[in-house]
Length: 109
Image (cartoon, rainbow, N blue to C red; front, side, top):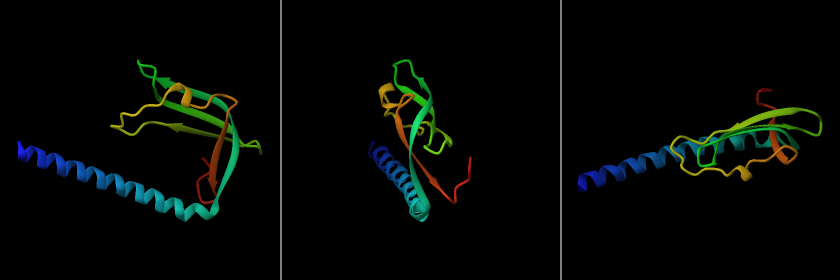
């Protein structure tokens, strides 16, 4: 039993280090791009939310339009193994305001 607990402890620590490394890479990339990032106040023009049997959101896609008329699409999917779910009211509806960011170095799509 003690060996099982020790193995579980090691597995949790390995997962935490891996998650920390992914966050560090993402933060590093964000900081590199930060000087070129522009924020836009947009309006949601389309929303497609998929739900589970319990009514929580399993994923969603949004389309927003910027004040200059540029349409941007994005999606949200939970990370594998994440139990925390969104409620339908937490997903912006059509007509809601949303923020979008763009970097001059990022691809147009």
